[in-house]
Image (tube, rainbow, N blue to C red; front, side):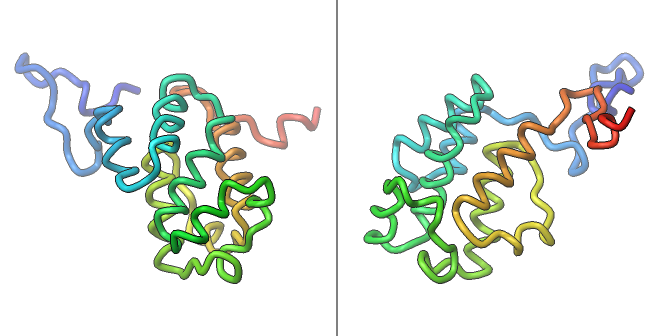
Length: 154
């Protein structure tokens, strides 16, 4: 099915974008805007992810996003190999509003949606990493149906 935004409109080009059909991202500018005040390595990783789809960029991006919401001393600890075990509330001081802001930044950078019921079940940095990686790996290319566990039941 052709999106409405790309449908010819009585010979006058295409229909204008509406609130229902967001305009395409202006890649680098939008990523830099979404990650403003994040460290340069996080922005570079996000640009690399967007260009290549390489999910190995995910930890650097997440640590940058979370790092801008926590105190500087905690932000420095995010570089630790044990950072995946850091508890969001107890160890990093992330409250519910911060978690929503973190999720919004992740959704914009990774172009995915994190349901609120799933968002508030995340307890550690590793949980966020795994949830986003799973969503990224399970997304079907446009126009294709995503694989489901039932596909393996033949």
